Length: 122
Image 1 (tube, rainbow, N blue to C red):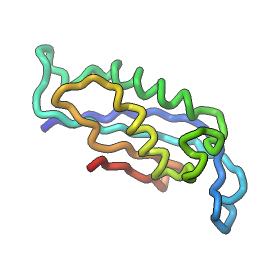
Image 2 (image 1 turned 90 degrees about the vertical axis):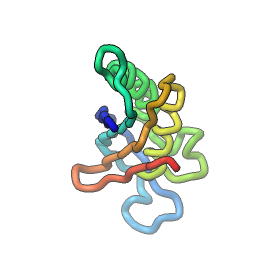
Image 3 (image 1 turned 180 degrees about the horizontal axis):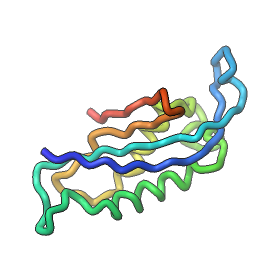
Image 4 (image 1 turned 60 degrees about the vertical axis):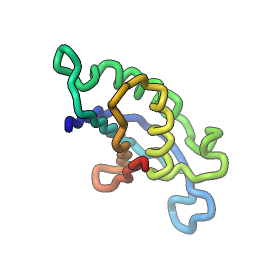
């Protein structure tokens, strides 16, 4: 089994609804996203998948989040834009990748260098 990781950063603001504490106020983070991909076979040139393809897809998803208020996105109209929900949102946004026998095994979102949440699909 092979595993790749692609990393990307973005900045965004958010606030948490129905939360008591300082995070109920709008504030920002410098997020870091790590996307993990797994597969059993390499292609004819020795790649699991081309990093460029993954980075381009990840960039398209991140562009929707970068330098905005996450609460204003339709995806977070009801659910809070927590690191957990952002990780799932990014995972879902990457489902347009056309990869046979390769799966996205996890998406990890870091709010700070010390804390992260990881989405692992079933």
